[in-house]
Length: 331
Image 1: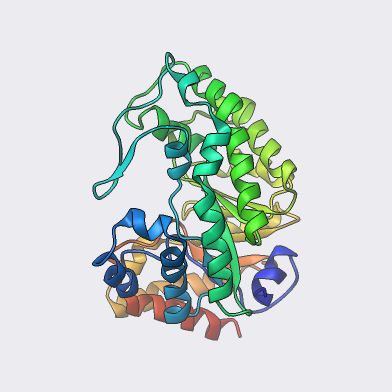
Image 2: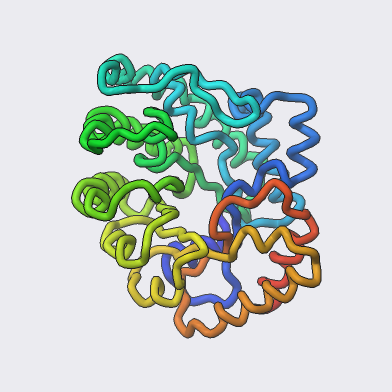
């Protein structure tokens, strides 16, 4: 009940054709998702396990991705802590956490109970997809989540406030959420950390990396980590941690990443904005990407994907072209 290409990538075994999956592969670009969205709210699609499984199944059936992804949202963990969350259409909190009320949002057990629908969704999704496909879960990155919790556009001058909440509440809860998804049948759980651009290098190295080390060490080779907005010299220390693998945005040179990693998969990192081009221009960019990846002599562990989530305006035709051409080029 696992995809052999993805399993080989996890084990860093040599193979020609890489497994393929996209961040947000079940989403607004896809007609299957849009048809469901006409009948149900986003919250209903996420919190009804049967519907979440149907959403996750859609891109597997249509595009033949190698990996299915739990359909949910990274912010439900904050809702579980007591923050009132609405999608209109994007996420909005009616209030935020601050230095004075942090202790009011610290009930980890309550938050975990709130996330039980993710466990059910994973189980039903696993039953729905083919045995030849893998299934993964995901959570938001600690920094990404704490920035949402405190108000993404409101900066606190002293990051110590953020790290206090991370250490006392959010990281312990994330670890329980990861365990919930793994116990339900997720092969690995991805951490999507898309808001690292406003975390300075010193705090990233001194205070944040130890948190990531703690999470990865709690689940050796069962948690993957995607980072966005960090330079190569900042992310290289991550390679020492026992993550299952790593995903990167379009700004990083994968050749250097492969040379500096000895375990786990390396995912990326076709520019997601290029997926918006017309077919002819898209094909040319894809040829360039394929040539770049072919020039990397040792790319054991490669998982082919995008630099970030697929854009809602992406033509479905380009998704088909991407997958077909990657598999053909590396077969």
